[in-house]
Image 1 (cartoon, rainbow, N blue to C red):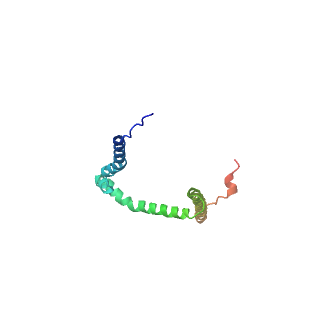
Image 2 (cartoon, rainbow, N blue to C red):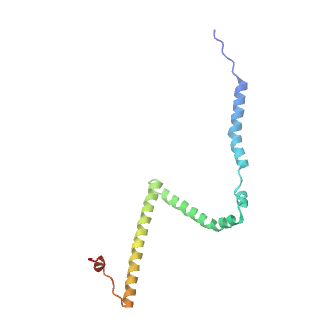
Image 3 (cartoon, rainbow, N blue to C red):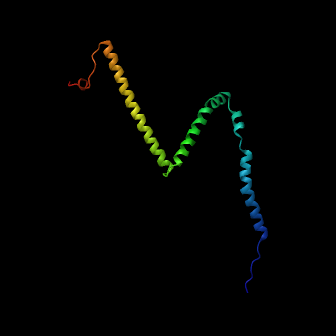
Length: 131
């Protein structure tokens, strides 16, 4: 006949109490020790406080724009990162198109100024040159 070991209630009680203290007490202690945003702000030197207050509106606006874009991207059937990559590609293409247009306008203004001044206008075939 084998004897069955008695259940150690004291050991399991200690384990449950210690585990509960760690699971509940750890985050509670962290929250108690962590300073609030206002306390951190008060510890800044005056220059940092001033810069932080000046840039607050821009940061909030950037964050609101980011969240608005995420909401817009989430309406698509595609993953957000795929929609974001496509949007970035469109924005890059648009900026390149704008840069080309601005370069053409600058070239046209330069030619107009040269004409007004009576200087010869450079033609693309003559600038390629045959040295």
